[in-house]
Image (cartoon, rainbow, N blue to C red; front, side, top):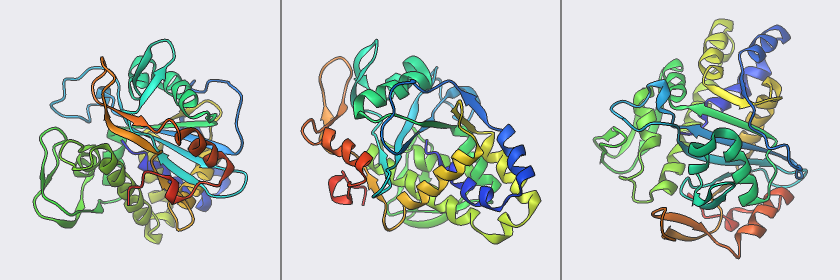
Length: 308
């Protein structure tokens, strides 16, 4: 699931006095996720949405273990374009110690550390900060802000995600519906690509809602929103509230007019190498240069597999 809660920090961090920032810093949960390998230029955040069944957010789902529906690279180069790139969960990748498989299998096999290592090997980009949010956190945050407006231009009744959208258009939804909105995949004509687009839509909807002055100027509301957001987060050791604030600023830049967002160049959306089902094959000729352009800040929208 998308890491929408992080954007809340953009407003909260900038508005808080030092005491509340220290309080918020103590609320952050950490995980030993980083590989310790050589870094690359700029700053890169790996954002993962955990589809863990442990939090009870997924009703009538008997799947065991942990999954990740969302894997994004937010890259801030030394100069140039900030980018937010979605790595499809079914991306065909070499998983250290396990061989070739779908990218999200790395999270199922070895949690955050193996996912970080696999993404670094796939992209050649060093991860500086890892940030994960669970399914229940998304629903809780949407409910904490009183719901958000989301739009869909077709009717959906999807049993797997639980999403029911009775007529095309926009509507204000609660946390449970927002969660289904961003989990829905099989009923989307674009599959994972369409889901990534809806995940970005939710992030932007939460951003707009949280920017309401009535929320960010009241200390009680600040604390309530912070508890809803930070309680759902799991971040790499050494990542604190200021790092999350910088990430939120970077996210705003990446989703603004001058930012770049999309997916890496894709050669085949239904690549079947055998043994792992249908996967997404990144373009072997274009992908290496694409990932380097993220670090250089030279990437443009034309270089991506666009969601627009």
